[in-house]
Structures are given as structure tokens and as C-alpha cells.
Length: 207
Image (cartoon, rainbow, N blue to C red; front, side, top):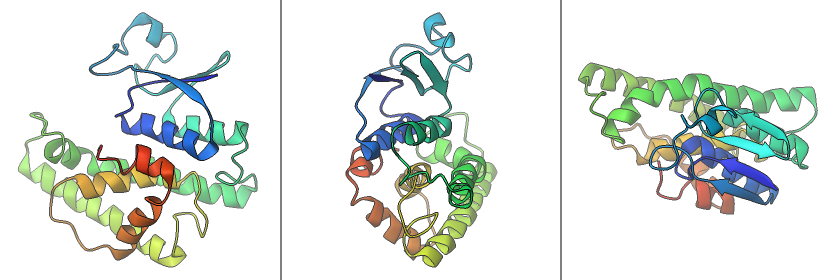
């Protein structure tokens, strides 16, 4: 059986849990990370030298990096409806997954740590404001895209890209600061919440 290593509150572990829910894929999960077994344990480092969750073990196959994991799971376990084989359709999914990882994540990092996590190391007011503005800019791009599709980030159908983006949208709404009105994003948040996997692992009160 598929084994997932990582605590369920981690946003990157939640990507994998949500993907498993969409694929109806059974798994076992072990708690690793802050508050549980440390990822600096030699047993964990032997699987992922970066000491980061999640890691999966699928038989003798080991994989880390959350976006790579969910791409693998969709490809391995009948998830063509989430991650199509056609190069152009697949590229559209990959585009938004990569945008979330590279641009959206980077924009909210400082503000989230300051405002949601209350990190003592993130108290620079100028940096917080800059991060909030960058985050709002990226979310404006997402709002425009969702207004175009009227549904999901890569088009009319739910895809693998909606998993990382949807988790970031949850984080957007649960981080306390003044936000611009983004009606397409708000509608998307509610649309995703119709999915059991998102209710369990996305819009579940966890940021």
C-alpha cells in the first residue's frame, strides 16, 4: 500500500492527501515533521536528504517534492481526468502548478509567516506590506484567469493544478489582512468546497 510520510497539517502533505482522495487511492500515513518524528532522523534523510515532507513510498519507489508526487500519482493510478496525456492540455495544468510554486508561494511567504504563524522572525512592517501587495497582485492574476474560465484554473474541468492553487486560496482567505474583492476567487473557493477532498484537506480550518 502507498505510504505517505508527513504530518496532516502540512500544506504540502495536504496536496498529496487531497490527490489521493480524488483518485480514491488508499494509503497509510506516518506523522513526520515539527511536533512529531524529526525529519533530520537518519531514517528520513535516507529517503529525502532535504529533510522535508512529504515523502511517499510506493512499494520500492520513493519520491519527494509534493507537486512531483501528485503528478506521479495521477499518472500511475488512472488520473488522466486530472492530468491529461495530451501535451497541450498537460502543459496548461503544469503551467498553473508551476506558477503556484514559483510565483504565488513566493509572494505570500513573508506575510503568511508574520500574520498567520505570528513568527517572531517576520516582524518587519515594510516587508509584511510588500508581501501583502505581491500576494494581492498574484491573486488578481488568478481572479482574472478564473473569470475567463468560469470554473477552474486550467479550464472548464477540475484538474491537478487546482490542488496546489486551491490550498493557496484557502491560505489567502484565512490569513488576516485587508484584501481586495476578488469575486471569481471567492466563487472558486466555494466551488472547490463542493469536493469532499477539499473539505477534508483544504477548506478544513487549517492554513
